[in-house]
Length: 97
Image (cartoon, rainbow, N blue to C red; front, side, top):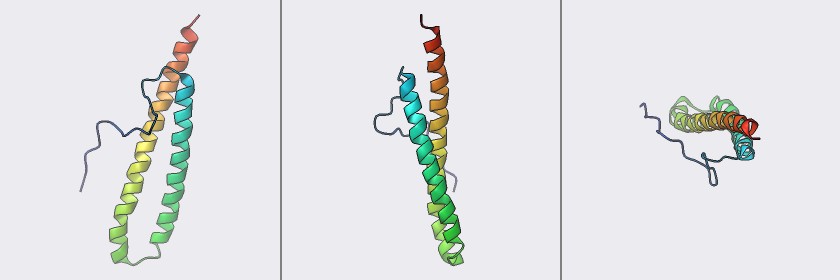
């Protein structure tokens, strides 16, 4: 079953996509990079563990894998957003006198 991607990703507490501070963008890049590393680690462990369960269990557990992958994709979109935002803000900083 295919699900539609949300128009806007859910933001973390305190995350302000309209910030004008380059330091904020760098902060969120670091946070999302940390979360991406965590999810990648989890997915590796889950894939390894799935090899040890029955086919019937694996079918149902695939929903968990799909959820983890969707969360990882959201984190990757957010880090891409903040990377772009950081570049824009850095350019604005360079334009100031």
